[in-house]
Image (tube, rainbow, N blue to C red; front, side, top):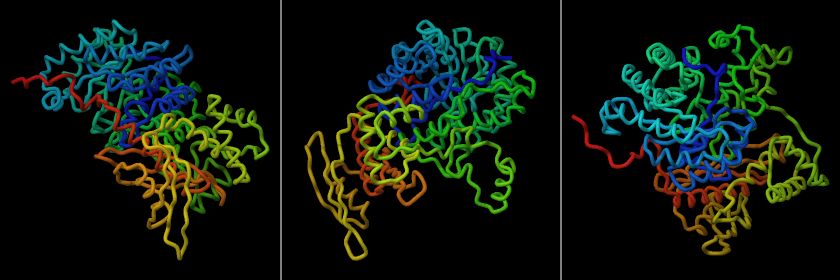
Length: 540
């Protein structure tokens, strides 16, 4: 049996693989805010990014290592392709963390070897020990991944894994890169590795999987039964294509069904010891933060964190829940941090009271950010009778967005009605062109606002998604708006909240424009799609 840490380790890759979701790119401050919340959540490892991709990616990983990778913090990990330049950049970026890890990888499936790497199996068997040993010379903790392991020849996979462990790999990751395998197949793959790799006892087996067939979570749970002890997942299951295995679903499956999974970890079935170190009461807050900052809206029927996850519409269900919640609920909503807490703060409340409540909610703001959050709180308190924790979260989630934005919204004024042509007047501050005002008409007030902003910004784009949802109940509730823009095939998201949904739409549109500008200025490599150096000639 493979090396066993005694529990299931949670490796969060929201900031690396999750950020590869179309339109979900994050700036440094946003990445730092998510990393700090992931530390509060209690994940074991944060894969903070791909340092070699760009100067911005390197800086983000290094900053997270400095500010989140302290003595009581998680392992801070960076991704690197199997090349010395990638590995050296990764080592330098994660160096400030007390506990650091290099995660290096190379493809092992024949389809990847032939069409992407253009290398033979023998060439890969030579690269793996060289790169792993180089990484091990820089850090003590090295993870090695066999990309596309799910479609690799098992016998070749065993050889590669054995070579990686001999070279110093402490964790071996088995990715289902394209989400192709079924639970029984994935479990058999992990079992085969345990049985056929002679030195597997010297490493932790990890799994990484995509959700193309909707089977990622099921695959991971089957992998645990067969010896996997680290799960690589993301908040809300975000990631490329159909996303990654969902952290909240995995953690809560292991929490609710602990009695079922305990024996697979050598425990008594009734052992009360948690299977992971995750603080489940932080799950909802983490989900909302990631959704707000990435612009990736959580579907209402999403397990654990969806808006309907604990809602009961059926009369029969409602009757049963009123008599005993266990009739139709297997999870207490409070276990995942979901509550209807309301705070007795109003327009007469002081700055210290607001700061104290934000700290209770887990937000650690700088003096400048707190000043801005308090100003928005006072403005909201003038317009809304009852302030909830969700209102505060909506306010604060914007504090970390676009700290060095090119565009700043200064004014939005709209006229519309049944007999009026919707017209918007917008003032926008542009670092390149100064402050300007323009009016525009549209099919509705939001369309008019977006037309005016496009005229002022002068950046061609297509608005492909506009969604509005209420933060809380009531006629005076804040409206959260998410906008996604497309330009040259790339997507950029913006998010904002306000009691006026037209103002929120304008703010969200400006946020998306700022992401677009930043994204086009950022030349970033993709770890799997960009080759390491010039491709070698095909081997006959």
